[in-house]
Length: 315
Ligand SMILES: [Zn+2]
Image 1 (cartoon, rainbow, N blue to C red):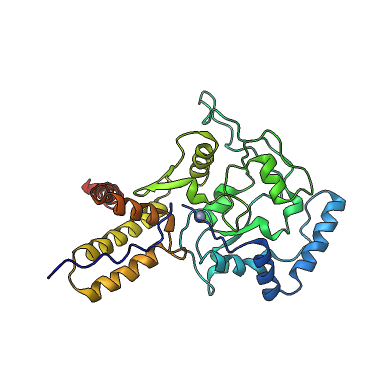
Image 2 (image 1 turned 180 degrees about the vertical axis):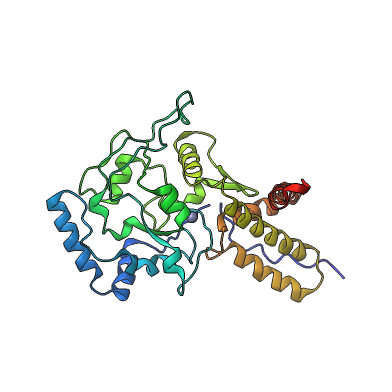
């Protein structure tokens, strides 16, 4: 019997963090209106009050009430690390509404180095600031995030490349143009697609650009969220490429059409926006399609690394 035909050629294969393009401001607003009809009116009132007081006040509507809108756009994954989180039933406890630009006073990032340690970057990452209180109830300043990304890492930091923080009342587009933020905002199309900044070599996140502003954005984002230092992310990515590898090999070697069909559907799912670590999966898929031998080597390196973490005594 002949070799099974390649069926997965049509699959989308782009280059942690992925973009959710349908989450444009208008659509986010429409979904918020449908979920909590008076949320936006209360938000507008609170924003007006804050503009008069020129500082943040917590008198607006509940952020938690609109959390499900973001959870659904993001398929219950963390916006930054693409980890799968609890869904509609339990997700509100596990997921945070993250303010992309912090509403309270900003601290400089990275935090001050211990004495004698060299600065981690040769470029500036922005000073402390008063915080973006006028965006506290701005829907395009939110996303759903896991607690290790939001509470531990994001906190009150917002590194920017420009020396000047934007001023009160500026909208997101004007702020982006003036501040040149390092962290990408993956909802809608107000910022670049994060998959044009960061790709994966096996389970390791890497900047795509060799130098320049995009290289620095990727570098800071990877460091900021600890994308290459968190065990839960290594585990998640290894599961992803291991699953993908097995399915791709079955498609290439099986002569059973039904199994090939099942595996092809599986590959589509692993590469879809809804899948955990989709960006990592897409990087591995691209490598597999362009150079299967290099993909096998990459898989083996990831496997060796993951086994050494799983069973340190044996390595
Ligand atoms: Zn996360």
